[in-house]
Length: 186
Length: 178
Image 1 (cartoon, each protein chain N blue to C red):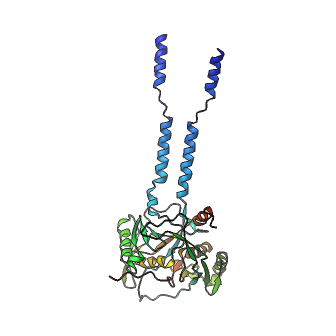
Image 2: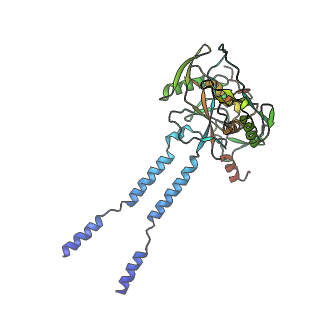
């Protein structure tokens, strides 16, 4: 009688591990997959709608020039874990890349100072232009002009700062940096 | 009495525990939903610059074309190289072909015909997303933008992709290089 009672108590004490293991697997898969799906952000900008020489007369619009000058291009190093696929070089990262921004004539060295300068210009409503459709005043367009050796990251910082301040008309101009390699002669 | 007990024990043996099967089905469903996400096929493995203030790209429109610009200037769309500066140089016809393909194949694009400065333009009023590596030299992106103003398919609204995380710094910290 006593041994039977003991047996039933022992049976009751056995915990079913299956749901816990299932949950652990679910969590592992969740955390593995969430790493691959990093949320991206976007910066809207506009390109000219037309190309070539224009005969249509238009009123001149004052634009804010934001130049990006590359002081040192930096040294390229292979990214950890990057491998060449045989056709293309492995991905790299750059050490010592330095740029200077020029908002109009003002040179700026840091991202925070760039935001401060853009905010100062944004607050000056005398520089605002008239919206063609509504007639309401709007901030002048910002023309991003990347120089030689500027990279996508530098331009993204400039556009990001301009959008943060409130400039919503972002355009691109100036030099496009060093030119791409020419196609081989056929 | 004895027959009743035997029938009960037979019935008990026949009961099947469905829990493991349901668990497995759930696991498989989650696996396929998260890993084999078809929309991710358009995104190349690039390290984008970190966004400080940009708007999160939470609900991207399904019909938005995505162009990846690699560090060496190659333009990759859905895992296919569509333009290579080493091979094509200043010949932008592959890019123009790509833009025309977008215009012709992507459904529900807002297309407008307009004559600007004497040139008949087919303006695409929907945005095109440019994803480039943070170290991609700007002239590659700039050249692509120049090519976007193509009269037969002019994508004049663009979006520059950024990341909400600084993946590169994390990667370098992990290997002790920063």
